[in-house]
Image (tube, rainbow, N blue to C red; front, side, top):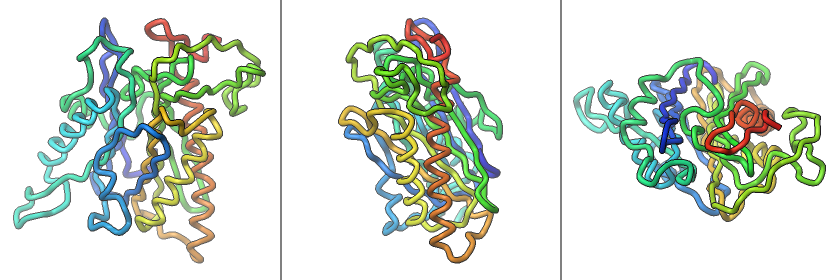
Length: 303
């Protein structure tokens, strides 16, 4: 990702299991925002990200499999942060804090035996594993992900815009396809230029792409929200259809504030928003490209 932002995974891929949790950790705090476009979201702590509400910074974003059950993974993230006295101060003592951990989940339940889904231990373990470098593909929250008829996964991309670095992480689990069935070509050319034959997908409701776009700029919550909104455009470029009634597409934005935003702010922000769409599309492509076959679901690389 970018300086000050760590990523950690924890998953189980074995008999009866194909699910996991990914944590985007900003222990020093970052201004946060969110944009939700899908018709079937599974989220927590998104209301507090509204620019009109009190809390200005978040300390982690928890992305998880397990559908609504997987929201429990964020409890482990809160425990990990609270043990280190990281959070929104609410009392006189250093440990009197409430960690701010928004989160979202994908629907991957059919990839595991019923009852096998992330809990708080997954979130805690993902925090323990958080680092500047991290694996992609069928890891963390992407362990049981699919994109259309193909295996999905975790993808990431980074770009430079003037003095700023902007990065994206996507858990690609969409109802739509990354490949145009009519032509056999990917919607995003960066995924490949050779026509492939995509197998039919059984309608099983296994949907939702979630992710984070992070930047080192000093942004307000309202400006951060524009970044999250722009990132959703990147999803729509790489997966079609996107934002369906059966997806819970949710993108969070984080701004660490390490680099002041140039003046005039509106032009600098606009450049960052354009880049957010590009890096999120690239992260989606990365998630599809890095995924490997699992439980009989073929990967793009197999085609």
